[in-house]
Length: 281
Image 1 (cartoon, rainbow, N blue to C red):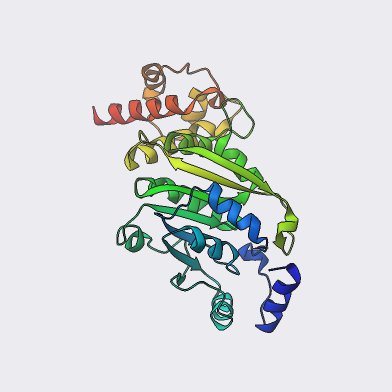
Image 2 (cartoon, one colour):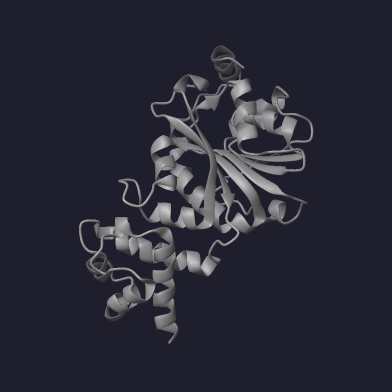
């Protein structure tokens, strides 16, 4: 589907790309197949797609996967897709907001393995990426299209400018298996930002849900004041027991006078556990 064909489709159905929903429609079929392969989708997989759009990626998923369930929030697009018969037979189309939708009926109700593939608008990217960490035990992996700046936060290494609490929790829960930057010409309308398709696989040794919540809270507190020492930043946050900061840091093997950006993910987990053990004791 060319950019001109997309314009014709939208005009025919009285639609327009919605900037607030991040509607930049992928129109390169060969690239869609490449992304599906990069995401590791195979004939044994069931796929939950977030953001059907005009169905280019959905069609590629249907060619590779055993089962495809796709979620679209825009009722106008859903009417247009149905009227023009643009989705392959057997694809299940859900009209819903993927952020608030309960995914469990699909992830738990149908044989897997399940993967998630998504083209995420900026407004929904962070909550859905965070939710994927919680659903990691149900997933074989996920491939998500996000802004390149957000993607950099996922893989940023200790000491880098983009390294923060978001980096910490993602690297504790998943490993990056692939990434590809996409030129704006692959989309209609052409976005003002560079997109990156990032593929992740859940770690076998990822923290429990409770531990992940704890380490996220501690890491956010620690990164709250990057120019201050870790001890001072934690103290100013009011999120942890101030009386136990130095003891917890010592138990985790962290210098309290260090900066948050120098602390690796495993040490953040150890610090969160130290605070939890102190609270339990």
